[in-house]
View 1 (cartoon, rainbow, N blue to C red):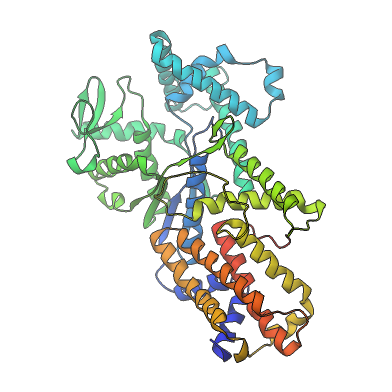
View 2: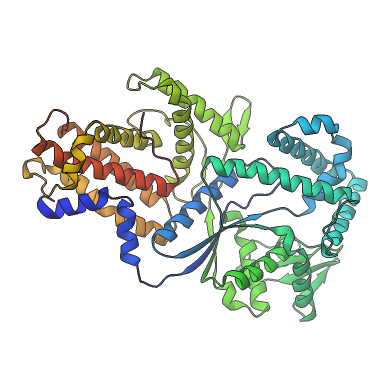
Length: 511
């Protein structure tokens, strides 16, 4: 770990890109896969909730790590902007709609809350009011006909005008959250754009004799192994069309994946969706087989994850991400003001609190295996000497401070060719082993699509760096001793920054 080999590794890790360049260089020129990653994909007319966030953060990591190892990735946000729920809102909205003046004074979040309240009441009425239920079904059929007729001029259709307005409000609401977490997509696609094709593929399956009629519904039988439990009537099947001939999510999904494949011609189609949707993807593959597209069915991969319960508060449990971020921000400010180790400039206090809140939310998700289920909590999130986002951010900040205080030595660090044997103790050797193992951690996380492989390794690096930092002081040392030590700490800081960014966390430099 001493001499030139150690120095070469450290100098390489100090460069922008650090350990990511190691993986990128290893895969450079090798076989590259075309991958489409579908993640986040929330329903509109709802607040961005903790379940959406889990898909978003896991999916964003899967997206990033595949780019790092050289794959050609297209990220897709497939908005759930169609279905009976919108007919429910449209049917009940006249009874809940506020005045135009009041409605126009509301923020997008407040409008989304109003629409959610409307949906909740409408859903209750669906269960107890047969007349209202019939009105909803009638409304949805009429909305589907409006779309399948091909006209985009809905000036005289109040239901479709409301739907378009909901789409615009929801898109702005979602974009705000994606901006907070620095999430971007290559493509925004919409479920509603596949309605016409969905009906065509459903009819093709009917014409080829693959379907049956069950109480007016068009169904397709599934193989025994493709369902986890039988329907109440004992038949293993998936529904393609309702009795009123309207489409379902599965029908639209068939059209969506066929169009997606025609557009992207990918080697793999990854769907980052909670594990409750396993049967949906099994049914989708069966139907693609019957359509003669077993090749496409084989490319579909369900990147499943366990469910997460929202943050518990005095008023109950909140699933709304905006409220969770705000609570984290409050706790971060409390921690900074009460901590003896913090001396924060009031001008940046709010910004640092935002960074710590977002860091904690991301870290809480990516520190555990995808399939785990948990309840979101800020417990120990802002406690010292814990394996949390705060530990990573504080270590990055402390190492940044060392670099900034010794900027005059950085030109000498660039030219450094020796790390002293008398500084190469067991703790330094362990830190070097952890740095060298990072490449394997990234590769393993790419293979398993598990961010926790990297998250855990970064925590180990930060802890090991803390031990070494206590022993190898830079301040007040002669240049021949300070420069090699600064080279080590500069490499660790860059690795932590690069690792945090790969996880989707903004590294804090001043804390």
